[in-house]
Amino acid sequence: MTLVAFAAIALCVILAALAVFQAALIAGAPLGEFAWGGADRVLPRNKRAGSVVSIVLYCVFAWFFLMKAALVPAVLPGIVVDIGVWVIVVYSLVGIVMNAMSRSPKERWTMVPVAALLFVLGLVVALG
Image 1 (cartoon, helix red, strand yellow):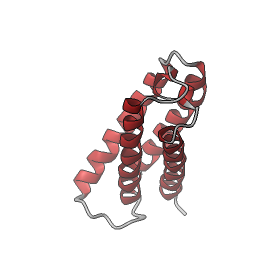
Image 2 (cartoon, helix red, strand yellow; image 1 turned 120 degrees about the vertical axis):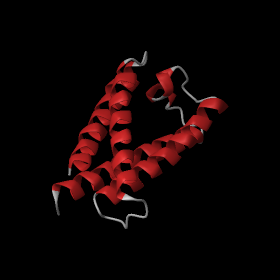
Image 3 (cartoon, one colour; image 1 turned 120 degrees about the horizontal axis):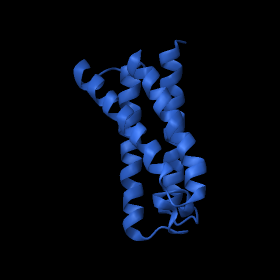
Image 4 (cartoon, one colour; image 1 turned 90 degrees about the vertical axis):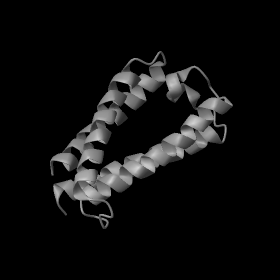
């Protein structure tokens, strides 16, 4: 297995774990201190809607990285995949900063490392 393939698969595993976490938030799990600024132990309706959007984005992100790593057939032009992957890498970098600015220590201590790992793995795939 190549480094790019390994990074893409690892990235997808992390995104899947984040999707499970967001689904738990949608279901009312008292884990809100780890997400969305950490202000709510149980997310209100509007933030739960944001969690739904997050799950959809995670699926799209995974699909782009799997296409870039040639682990699934590329159904989009290569340039679209390349641009999409770089946009997601930059988005992950912004995620590090945004999570670091959270008022919630729980969110900072858990999500900053997760966002950093997504950034590094995404960068490996993007450069590969």
